[in-house]
Image (cartoon, rainbow, N blue to C red):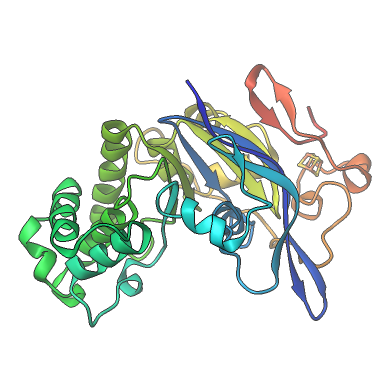
Amino acid sequence: MSTVLDVQHLTTHYRTLRGWVRAVEDVSFKIEKGQALGIAGESGCGKTTVAMSLLKILPKGGRIRKGSIIFDGLDLVPLSNNEMRQIRWKGIAIVFQGAMNALNPVFKVGDQIVEAIRTHEPDVDRRSGMDRARSLLELVGVEPHRVDNYPHEFSGGMRQRALIAMALACNPKLLVADEPGTALDVIVQAQTLKLMRELKDRLDLSMVMISHDLSIIAETCEKVAIMYAGRIVEYGDAEDIFKEPLHPYTQGLVKAFPSIKGERVRLTSIPGSPPDLLNPPTGCRFNPRCPYVMDVCRKEVPPLKMQGNEDHLVACHLY
Ligand code: SF4
């Protein structure tokens, strides 16, 4: 297997009037060809900032302050915006959350896909762009003649599929999906995830799937990184972590989701709320909410260390 993406010590902060918000701190992970990595955690844990850092589309004030993002052998961090244009869409593409709002309501779906193709491949003429748009819609399970429809003529699930088709328009090697099921009902959400799994296998795509829902990640991804307050606290095989989480935060996340199989158990939530990342707690950032907190947790940042097998890493002083 070859490595498509190798992120090392990624540190992304946002400059605000009150100081730097430390949104992502020292995050490292790798993705092999044809493999999917899920990034899970509560809102505000930094998962979307990781996704935006990969494409270097951070909002104003956001800056990658340290680390490297090696995509296909090339470090993206020092690249200019012009150089990044060659990478976006053709190398790494993103499916944003909120299918309802991501398409322009005044243009036909086919025209929007053609525009995405011609922006990144200016030599493609309109007719062959439209042929590709039809094939792309077919690939994601929408009838090709629907290229002539406006977004309001599509259901929520079809719009999500159209966005996935648009992201695949220039045959990227890596697809980043930011909460792809958000705002869709559970049945359409399950169909979208099934489609993403099928596309990953059929096109040998590598994927980063961002979600707050661990069960979505366990179903779609081989690997998972659990983020808390800007740091990865547990990393490993998605199924193993879902079945036997080691970090107290991951244990809390797993207990917060219902299981439709097995015994009926009362769901629990993690007390407290995520910290202010302008002034995060010293030591382990989870210490104010952790039921197992010790003195050392308030002083020293726990390193991400191997547990059991070399693929399972946990950042906690308990281990
Ligand atoms: Fe809890 Fe300490 Fe582990 Fe952090 S390092 S999760 S505070 S036990």
